[in-house]
Length: 421
Image: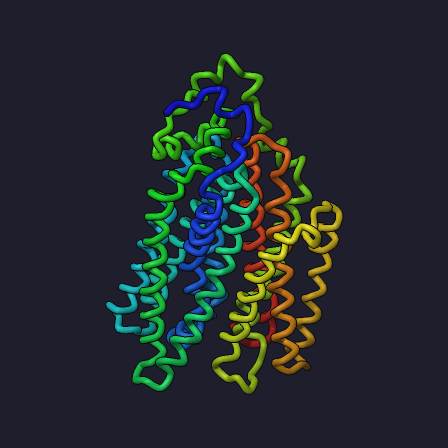
């Protein structure tokens, strides 16, 4: 099959595979963060093995620079990068890294020590690189498709946190009284995460590109001048002539540069940056180390992480209701800035409040994070051509990762002067 001009004149009245695509996008979103969320969720295990090394803070700080640096390089070269190879490389790296984490624990019999800690940090570096490959590639790819796809993908990202939290609570309860029970639960937990990563490789390689609705949007993007979808179209049995027509239709295929897209959408980019600066300055380091001792004991941090992830997931479905979806650029900025009121709230609640107030605050942190993320990422790409939407999606993810890194660095301010270094 070959693309011709008639194939892009009008949108088909019925695009088959939409709901299948939404399910696949949800699973791919799950796979994009399940490895990293596994690391965060077994934080109680790593605090037992490495009590002096601040695992939740250090591992996050190791992860983010490599994710951000890799993403910056990929964004700079985005117009020339094969999206299919990029995403498959990322999912494969996630699979191998999660499996390596499992093997490392089995090979060392769950021993602590600096050497093992450095090994875990090296695996976390691979997680960061894989995240940059997958998250930027997928958001860019889905930005020129129907909004439901990117919403499902973002919901899958949140679901990875909710699912890993639920699995962690189940495995902790199941093995709590067993001999070496904490480690047994972690091993089972990592094995399940490894399976999900392998599933994502199969879905992206063999199922997603062959859905009729996906073929339509990628065909349309290729006809508008996108060169990043050629391999995906080839995998679906479609040969694109967009490249050959580029010279004859130069004006038609012209697109805004990354710099132009950046300045036209600087408020959206700043929104995402600030959303994740605030979230990562509290989650997960503050929740593990700065919330004190309460009746829930060793379960307390796990419950807080689970509550955050659950409400983050719920919030990512709220924008599906058009009447309460925030689309105003000014409104999004006001909502984003107002979240910084969480900082004094968390400080005083940790110092004077009980666990009920902290759980309520964490739920609102998750709600606002998920809701605003979906609103920004679905509203921003509207009105652009396929290649521009692809590029803008990657710019948005770059700013998101920059916010994550900045938030992780600022998170250390919570423990300055409290004698925990």
